[in-house]
Image (cartoon, rainbow, N blue to C red; front, side, top):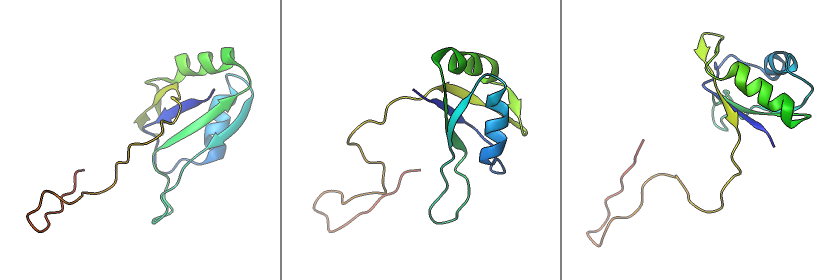
Length: 103
C-alpha cells in the first residue's frame, strides 16, 4: 500500500519528501507526478514505506501538518479505479454543437 500526500508546495522535490517520511521509517519509493505540458509538480505525491506500521505513523504525524507553507493532506492511497474520464466537455444534444468545460 502507499500513502497519498496532497496540498504540496509546487517547489517540493523527491528528496524533500524522502527526508520527511524517513523520520517515520524506511521509504521504499516516492512518486511525484509532473504536468506533461508545463513540467511543473502537480501538488501531490505517493510515498511507499516498508511496513504498514511505518505508514500509519507517518500518516498520523503528518496529516494536517504545515510544511513548506502548506497544510498537508496525508492518508492511505486509494486504488486507481477503472473507467470514468474527467476530460473536457462533450457534444450536447442534437443542436449542432455546444461544447462545455467544467473546472
